Length: 374
Ligand code: GLY
Image (cartoon, rainbow, N blue to C red):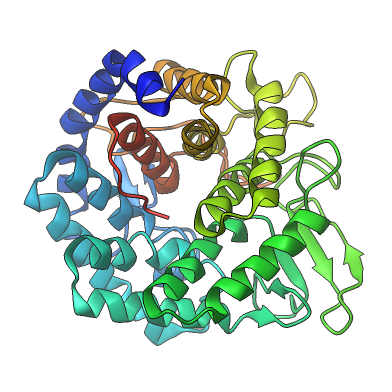
């Protein structure tokens, strides 16, 4: 079955979701206009910024990303204007520099990167290339991209699979293969050291930065060492699918499919991911964001493999999110409310801008939009 056939078979759901987004987002935008920060979450009905790192907060590209997604869905200039306003606010992050880390891919590929690819804007191109160079500068030539700053010299995390797309773009755009080579070296390391035999993924691997010996595999944002933090599984799923799309390397596709099978097996009871697939059975902590990221990856896998089980799982998750995790009211600015930052943190059952971005991205894929944000 082709992706087009699968897509058309669920056109009613796609139409319903796009109507809901078109009704909801003008209010979300109005509540953001004039703020001197980029919306991340919601408190008392009002947008709130990220909890730390100021303008360098790693999710600050997702609000302009949401605006570009809505611009694609509606063609309305107000979304483009807000996307550009947020992109310009992000210039302070370059000036700060100290709080930037590997998540410059999340921050700029879907803000300035989307802007440049849609309009050819030259300032947006420069921002995106600058971000790609910052990311390439974090590469340890033994074989991994360093995640965080401070004394985390040998730390790599599965989330970085999504940042690699900035490097693929940089090689495509400049014709210089170095960026893609760095990305593929990191992806090869992730396949070897993060993905386990059962198709689950570690969140963090700590390498000796001088030898690349594995020193530790901590729990990170998940429940415990060796457990399966669901958003990490989603980063692996979508990240390897995208690495396959950008390189054609079969191992990446095989890995994405293996992770996808395991992910689907863990969520198919009610189609809402728990925060960690290994958390205690009586613990109901959820992460809708993991579902939104995974849905995007599954839709790409469905397009590549023409396997309808990936498509069905993606749509089941999106339907479940709509039914039990979404606030479509005009008063509340975000959409998905059952998101969790980390299992042991305090940020449980909150809204997070990246959950809403991936939900919109998934609906755009269902609409047949050919633009790949990543
Ligand atoms: N990249 C961090 C997270 O997924 O929360």
